[in-house]
Image 1 (cartoon, helix red, strand yellow):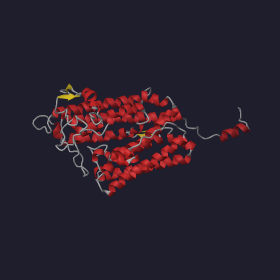
Image 2 (spheres, one colour):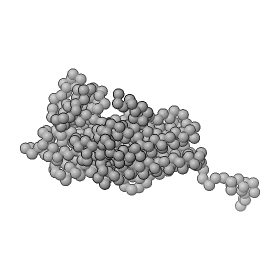
Image 3 (cartoon, rainbow, N blue to C red):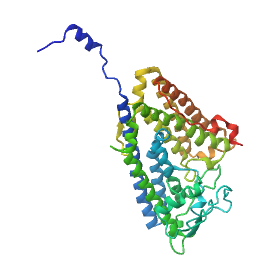
Length: 418
C-alpha cells in the first residue's frame, strides 16, 4: 500500500470540496429544462385537445368550462419557456406560431358591432368562419374546409400584417372565450357554449365551421409544440446550437433573461398597458388570465438562473446552474441576483393573488386605480431592478454581445403617445 507524502497530502487537503462548475454543465441543465418545459407544454396541449374534442362532440356549459380550464393549465408550462426567446434564434423564429399577440380577432370570427376595425388591416373583419370564399392579396381563396394548412399557410399573418394572428394559444383563447367587452371592469369573454351547437340552437352562426376552426387550430398548436420539444431533445437543432459554443450559449441564457425581464415583460406587457389604461394590451386578454401569464414568465427567468424547473407531474429537473457559475466568480453578486429574482416573484405573486381574490388585471389597468398601479408598477420596478443585476452578471462573466431588448414605454415614454 502506498501512502501520500506530506506535500501531496497538503495539496489534497487544500483542494476545493467540489470541482468548478463547467459552462458545458450549465448549458446541459439549460437545455434539459427547455426540453422538459416544451414537452410539458405539449402534454398539456394534448389534454386541451381532449377537452376541445369533448366540447365539439357535446357542447355544454360543462364541456366549455373544461376546455377553458385545460387552456389555462396549458399556459403554465409554456409561459415558463419564454425565457428561451431572444437569445435563441431557433426559438425566436418559431415563437410567433404559438404565442403571437395582440390579434385582430375579426379575421377569424364574428365580433361586436362596435369593434374597432384597424385602418391598417383590410382583413380585420374578414370573418373566415362565416365566409367559405375569401380574398387575400387579390387572390380568391377556397376556405370551404378549415384545415391546419389553411390557417398556417393562408390566414396567419395574411399580407404580412402582424395582427393577423390566426393560430396559437391566443387564437384558441378567443374561440373559447370570445371578446372581453368589459373594458377595465371585471369580467372575461362570455362566448356561449351554443356557439358550438349545430342546428337550430346554434348562436353566432356557422357553428360547424367554428368547431372546425377550433379543431384545426388545436391540432396546429400540438404540431408546433412537437417541433420545439424535438428541437431541444438529444441531437435536436436548438440543443446542438446552444452547446456548440459555450460562451455563446451562456450569452443566450442572459440575453433571454434580460430581454424578457426588461423590454418584453416590464415594458411591452406591463408598463405599456398601464400607460394606455388599455385592457387590449393584456397578454391573455380574452380569458383574463394575464396575472398567471406574468407570474409564470417571471418564474421561467428564475428557473434559468437557478437551474431548476418543476414539471407538471411534480418532478424536478435540476443541475449545475448559472447561479453556481456566478457564485464562483462573485458570491455577493449571486446572492444579489437570487434575492432580486425572489423579490420579482413576490411582486408578481401579489398581482396573481389579487386577481384570484377578485381584483382582475383589467381593473388594475383602470385610469386612476391607485391599488392597480401600485401592484403593476411594483412588479415593473422589480423586473427593471433585476435587469440591472443581470447586466452586472454579464460583466462579471466577461461576456460580449449580450443585447437586452428595450421598450418605448420604459426608454422613451413620450413616443408611446406619438
